[in-house]
Length: 221
Image (cartoon, rainbow, N blue to C red):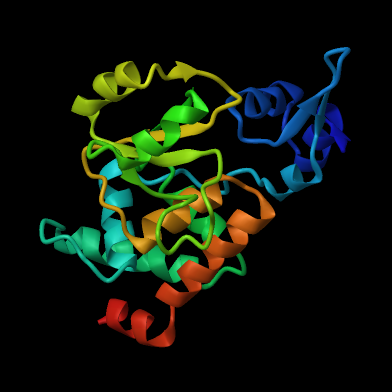
């Protein structure tokens, strides 16, 4: 366990930024009876972003290209930029974190609490597309969490039907995007966002499979 102030010093960020990460749910922690917040050791996997994220449009172009399903509406200039980003992902020792940094603008993330009895119904709802933890190919069992995407026009209906309430102690991670398509690259980015060892490991397994020599050769053409 580490104090928030120690974490901030080690990561070179302000205490205010560290507490912001805590309250957003980005850092796993426990709160003691006296209100003291202690970070779990897995929080040390979090690293500050090294570059600005791509736009939502470019993020989805990258995710599709990486998964071998390029979008037909990409421009020639965008195609080359996407390929450069894929090469940058392939050249790092931690491709999952690099990909998650680049595509962090792919969707708006909402953290909700729902009744545990409703989670299975939510996962089966046709408006909700399963991704991240619990998605086929993720290597992770969902357990007590529902993670996935909805289109903007379905957000109000889904939150109302399942009485979803904003909460940092979320058991529903809902990403909203009109471009959402669930691909192995998308599942990997969602897993990497957890910032915890097992999820990041599974995300790297998926990405390295996508970054196999044959796949990179195809992207580079």
